[in-house]
Amino acid sequence: MKAGVGLVSSLVLFLLIGAVFTQRPRPKRPTKRPPTTRKPPVRKPVGPTEPEPQEPTDFPPPILGPPSIFPDCPRECLCHPSYPNSLNCENRNLRKVPIIPLRIHYLYLQNNYISEVTAEAFNNATEVRWINLANNRIQKIDKQVFEKIPALLYLYVQKNQLKEVPSGLPATLEQLRLDRNLISKIPAGAFNKMENLTLLDLHYNQLSDINLGKNTLKDLKSLMQLNLAHNVLKKMPSGVPGNIIQLYLDKNRIDDIPKDYFKDFTHLAFVRLNYNQLSDKGLPKTVFNVSTLLDLQLAHNQLTAIPFFNSHLEHLHLNHNSIESINGTEICPYEMQADLSDDSLVPRLRYLRLDGNHLHPPIPLDVIMCFRHLHSIII
Ligand SMILES: *[C@@H]1O[C@H](CO)[C@@H](O)[C@H](O)[C@H]1NC(C)=O
Ligand SMILES: *[C@@H]1O[C@H](CO)[C@@H](O)[C@H](O)[C@H]1NC(C)=O
Ligand SMILES: *[C@@H]1O[C@H](CO)[C@@H](O)[C@H](O)[C@H]1NC(C)=O
Ligand SMILES: *[C@@H]1O[C@H](CO)[C@@H](O)[C@H](O)[C@H]1NC(C)=O
Image (cartoon, rainbow, N blue to C red; front, side, top):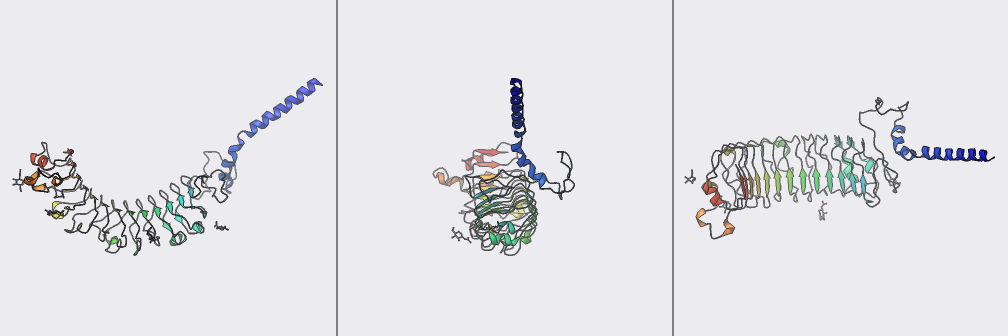
């Protein structure tokens, strides 16, 4: 009898242990299962190395999130309970945009395999303010998408495969990042009425002079940062709005600057023209005499002389040109005789790069006499 009880109880114990053991891996299963059940063509249980020939692409399957307290949270995304207005769908192997719930303001879709953005996903997403679509494979964003999200402020679509600036962008935009695409076309009126746009990033595309006609940027009254670096421009872009602060044009093929190009800019402080084809001939003598300018970068061009600049300039990059000599008297932006008394007249230049030219130390005395705030000069 006792033995029987012992046997029964150890059997019960065994069953319990068995239950515990079989239960232990179970919590993982629900997260593992959906990817395989989502692929109907797979017949056999799939080993990790087995190829999946039925998949339309080589991309790994979408990663599904844990169950959410929000019933409207798409399974492909994360919905943080403390950020009810954010939808985190980044890094989840997505091929398409999931259905966006109405409560969402901030939408993170970067680092996926999305190739097209269509309107259906946004049918209820009328409150969206920010969208990050960076680093996908987007070739097209349907115009209708933007009709659904009329309050959009930030749109980040850098590192994709767009061939043109999307049409129908909302006039509400404040930041637009389209860098690192294949853009060679800006449809007429693409930036019309965007009176609040402060940042436009188009660097690393295939834009040429014809894309930047007088009217392309004309409505962008609030524009502060314009990045057109790494395109195929031969001329300075026309119609750049007068309130601009940063103008980046590195890595183009610009070989001259019109005489009054910078005349009408009232806040221009940062100009980058590194890696262009500027020579002395292409630079009118006082073209950079702009009193708001703080940082001027002209590295990797073909200059043989130091251009004249305003006494307010603080940083000047002239490295990797063909400069052979410096005449401190000529480049000094004020009369050296009238100096010592008034410090506000002393040129503000603090940092000067001249390495990669045909210059040799020592630095001429008149340079040191004139630029008394110079902290570092690299020859
Ligand atoms: C949009 O919202 C309505 C009501 O909130 C809901 O019935 C509908 O299913 C939603 N549509 C989509 C595509 O989620
Ligand atoms: C620009 O911003 C102002 C102030 O926030 C706002 O009143 C105006 O409607 C905005 N313009 C557009 C086109 O959204
Ligand atoms: C440079 O601009 C200043 C005004 O900022 C002006 O007073 C000065 O005469 C100009 N210098 C030259 C050489 O054009
Ligand atoms: C520098 O330029 C001034 C004015 O053009 C000239 O008088 C002077 O001789 C030059 N100095 C040198 C070392 O060439």
